[in-house]
Amino acid sequence: MTENAYAKINLFLDVLRKRDDGFHDIKTVMQTVSLCDKVDVTATPSEKTNIDISVHNASLPLNKDNLAYRAADMYLNEAGITADVKIVIEKNIPIAAGLAGGSSDAAATLRAMNCIFGKLTMNKLLEIGLRLGSDVPFCLVEGTRLCEGRGEIMSELKTPVAHLVVAIGDDRISTPLAFARLDDEFLSEDGKLQTGGDAAFSLLMSGLDKGEIVYDSLFNAFEFGIDKTAKSVSKIKAEMIFKGALAALMSGSGPSVVGFFADKLSAENAAKHLLSLGYFAAYATTV
Ligand code: C5P
Image (cartoon, rainbow, N blue to C red; front, side, top):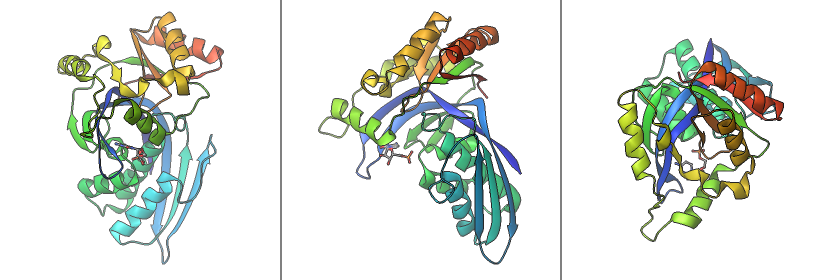
């Protein structure tokens, strides 16, 4: 059973409030894109559970530190089954990039396990997903969604057509540190953060109602102060604009950057240009 595990980008991402459980309430428009990992799962019932995981193209932990491993384990526990599970991941999405690669692999594993065993409802998968990570519920359902809470309160939006380049340099950013940096800058005594994203949100939503992206409206609060932690972000953005991007925005807590282009050819040319400069770059569309 092979599942595509699509990367996600954020067309809008704001952090609204620090919660008592250590997480933050966010407000984000997430979008799956065609750049994807392939997750192949085979599973047969057996007396004792054994999960074997292998990864092509990347070095990742092959035990409980791997989200896909944990997803399979949690699925079996919730379903009350013991099984021999083999997971093979072909990794194409950059790791720790703000593209939800690990979350998407976990979501694909849950979907594949449920195709094989058919034991759990979608609501149960979403619940397990949230225990695995904040982006996993969205990765389970895919498409274009307004996501609130930690990301699990989702409403479906029209999917806009877009020609994209997803790119990243050598910088990497820790998600908890990215949240902490925003707290330092924007957190007020009532626990709320005022980052100034409201106008951009209204503009984006008015376009998405018609299935269009208003490029002036793209907003990601995590871009604040990013030059101090990941210099590659503004460099990549500048190269994308130089190659004709209509807009360029960091994805998630970074440091991957997404460029939006008028057509496939200009996006592919920009991707080639970024590759020649030594960055990872891939053409992608919205899916
Ligand atoms: O849910 P996930 O494992 O992706 O979260 C990693 C870390 O990022 C959390 O432990 C938390 O510090 C931070 N985070 C947050 N609010 C969110 C999502 C993540 O503070 N909505």
